[in-house]
Length: 344
Length: 295
Image 1 (cartoon, each protein chain N blue to C red):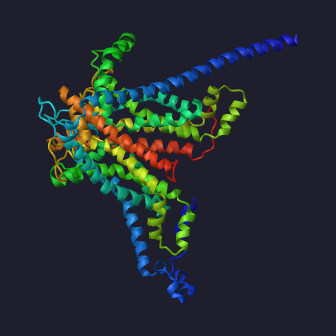
Image 2 (spheres, rainbow over the protein chains, first blue to last red):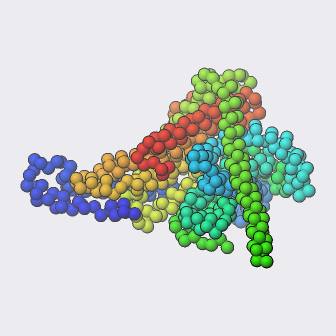
Image 3 (spheres, helix red, strand yellow):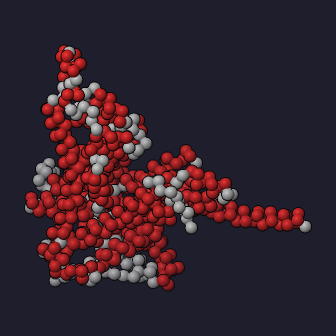
């Protein structure tokens, strides 16, 4: 906070810089003390240069919005809102509808959350509240290493390790015991919505758990001690004292993970099957908004085709922005020292 | 009478307590198994990378260009060089702008405009990489009328800037005001203080931010698909389509050829080693530096 006062520079006016005492002894005065117009000019130029860099950030976001809206105009005029509510994607006849991509993106992301959230919270709870002190840093570092692995390597691993595993063991087992729900039926290809959900889950666990750890650490120690003093066991202390107070922030982490899952491209493209259809079964192949751009953008020949893909990109951009801003606000509400609320 | 009641009460207490203790134990067990379940894929990914990658990794892989389908041998040397070229372009554009924006936020950004830039940088950080690819396609590829290393570099630079900006701001703000005031007290001008004193003090932290941004974009594939595009030959011209390591891994991984699959694993091993080495180097540097604890 104190740094913010730096703006008040004590030596900006020339008569202050070259005080009478200094001016009286020219030889003792090092050159850099001279506060002339050149130096002021340099200061101002420097500030402008830094400002220009800062404004570049604004310019970039403006460019993103501008590029996406202008290049998507054609599709917007041709289809309007119907674009997002019809599912035929037919480049040959120049008819485009993004519903199956929207569906694939939402289902794969929700599936990923379903798997990742309990795991991530478990990891965060274990690291912050249960693990011995010496194990904390190594565990935190290792789980965060998961976030450093590039998407394309997850995809590679998923194709050759995860998909065969799903096909041979997991999917037959799921079909036998949960087949009656209708959600897991049909031929077990391995590749499909389920594989996409699982690989996405692995990729977003470190994001959710690192935010959860951050907000759980922000819960004041007195909260824990108070609950313990009432005779609670450790788990009761975690549930009431920690999770209850950190709840908004953990939601923020979950939504941040959702944002990442919605925009994730490569790993999903490699295992989801890339077929624009809406199927009830999680075993069936699907397609996501990011994948269709990745697969078809560089070979989209017609103008309407390209414009439709950009429109899909615009929708993806807007959704991730909303999701990320929401997540940011939730995390701030906890880490910015708001008074802890009762969890009931 | 009253004694019997106390006894009964304490027995009830004990049974509740046993139940609660069982729940506590169960929760501990559940959290512990969550950790194991999360570490399992991590181990599996690294294990398979080493196991599958090391067999295909040889000198030819690191020194030759890809061979046509059906011929054994060949390598990804041009893709490694292409990645270096693209990342070089990205760093040349992204690092100065990112650091400059960070300095602006820390030194001059205590106002509405600063808040706006800060918020925008966070927004930019969350934009999906594939969308950045579309934008780089629009602003570079469409102008040049062909795919190029430059377009790939611009896409990656856009992704580096917000990370570097926020890291630089954080690090520069950690520099004590007294250090700046000492410089001002000697009559050093403000720009000189910022460059030679403040930034220099925060240097190890700023380098950490830059390296993390670099490691993050080094493995990016999606924004390169329709900017750098890929190339099976050597290319050092930044106006020409260029191969990149992640791109090559992707193309080989989804191909139907076993030989290419093996090369994809080797490429992935090279990529992960590069990234892990740079991230750990950063941890080491940041751990020794004066501004640790904030990375």
